[in-house]
Length: 256
Image (cartoon, rainbow, N blue to C red; front, side, top):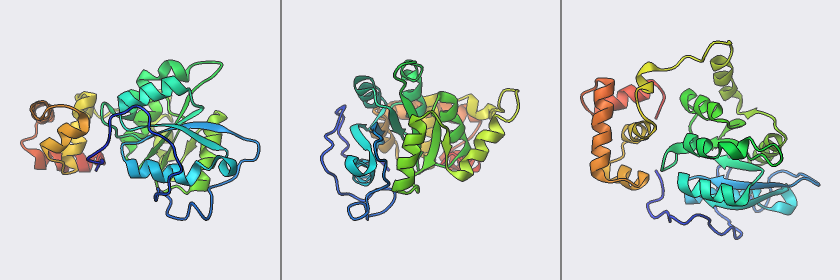
């Protein structure tokens, strides 16, 4: 779950963090990777403060890794503000974010991605390995997708590869993309899921993960009444009766 006390400021200071990140606690003794002569300016977008702190500690030792974390954000609006202001080479983007998710960040940053002189490239970094999440952000314009089990050294390598314009995926996830785009026909869609708006999908996932309405409201910066309205709309569109059926439906589609 997201940090309950997550601030809403646009950019957080990037002082030397020492927390534990996705790849373990050994960052201080064993800096991640080495990239002599290379530099990549990176913005880190994730709604978990502890995870951001850990990634900063793991890869942000610029003299050793070549990676400079120049900004952080915890939700969609913060992300768009920070990315627009700093114009990094690479954005490490979580998929599930308050305010519309990683796909919404990609949509709003589309002009920056298509800038011929100084393109901003996106690498999804998420705990989710759901095919729908992977395909969604790749359709949105991300250059790759790796899970949070990645090592610090491999993450540094992935950042530089994405900076160079390569596509990077965790091994199992590459198959999702190949399957989705293997033919010249439009990729198959889930007609039931396609009936839902982006916000309804966010509420669906959080309900399926066991969040209470108040927690969802805080996570998405909306009122409890609005959450209730979204849940009612989801149940109606999917022809389900209660949140238990909704949870089974989401789990069967690996959306949780």
